[in-house]
Length: 115
Length: 115
Image: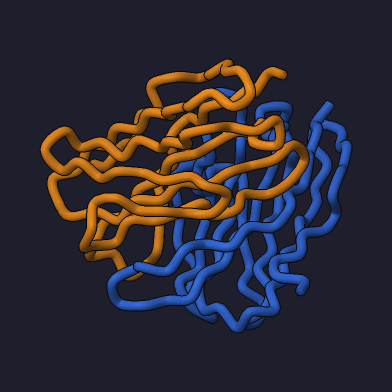
């Protein structure tokens, strides 16, 4: 049972470099999310995609872009990495329903350090 | 705007003792409430959820939570903890009428179970 798969698991970048974090889910979920986790701040939503072909900003979108490549895949791109983007990034997915009752399923995270 | 406050950043407790992790939320509309657990170097797993109906919700691993609308709280409890319960716990809220599934997370509470 793969669930939500994130790659890579770890990455170190230099300031100004770019990279794309990959996320794929095999649960046929419509909605996908990207969060960042920082100590003492819980998880904060960066971007989400309610369905294939749509994306919207969350709480902290600055410095990031996303692509919903197809129903399975949702990638997060850092165009010019900054030390403030050092964090653990989580991808999640959920079934969509009108009431939003469905829980989100999370990947194991990508630990990103920007030097 | 919605917000979630977890009142304790760390909770140390001895094995087999009871524990309560506190969560308060602010919202002027109906909400759905969730507790997630994060073990070291892993993603988040759903412990339990409150959508409607009985205010006492039972989850996995012997945890339960009680929804209190008048006090806007959703505290997590376990009558007897094990060493394996050592983890970080997150309370999260979703607006009841949301069709985007966006979650607002609390800051997290680290449960440290000592032998």
